[in-house]
Length: 258
Ligand code: OAD
Image (tube, rainbow, N blue to C red):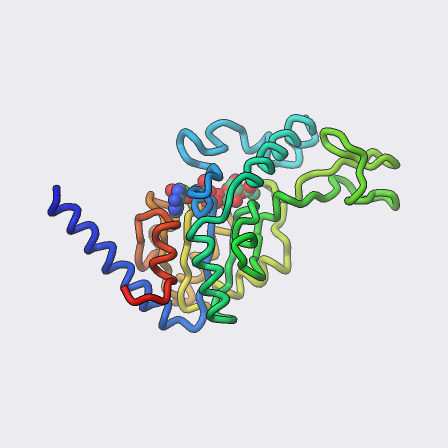
């Protein structure tokens, strides 16, 4: 047992030393994050067997335009619940390590996230490429009329435009919708041009986001996966660190010698 622990910890230490060296060598590092990076802040993931959102809710009901149109109050209340949830949590050591390193090494990191919780931005990361939108923001469900004012909707579940009845919806990307074009273009370019991509806390199940790791792999970047469990992107990984990201990221990005 003791020997197993020593073996494990020396394997982790050597993995971390290798990836630290890769970070040092890379002119540009792209980081793709998913729900797992916020797990240790207390935000549920989507595909965790028991506690993930999709273990309790149907994505076609809660994360599609058709689902919203079918029952707007029900879906709106779920997003309000998620907003209350993220208002109670704080960025963790993983979010902070990424933000700090990017500040110390200007123009060497592109941070791409599938998360809508805003915790990277709260940790101080700038220019985050939010592929799936932002939970704290709203937009109109239908084409806006001259009176549609995002700052002054009539309160309701959901709030609506008093002139035309247009409904607010959360400014997140739902299944079947396109990713924001300019954000995607920047993410794709970073995946093509980086020398190292870290894929952190994502199951790799949702495209096109997951495809970024494959682009990086195809264009000869090193790919490192940080995830305590297996993911659908493991086949493109040059290295996997199977530990929680709030523990690993500070070890990878701290300036102290290990
Ligand atoms: P998932 O829930 O699919 O995957 C989360 C991943 O995080 C899993 O592979 C876990 O093993 C891993 N994980 C859990 N705890 C972790 C920790 N402490 N450190 C590191 N990894 C950990 O979430 P995503 O891959 O982000 O889309 O899901 C992608 C998209 O699917 C989401 O953006 C969302 C969802 O439907 C939209 O809402 C549009």
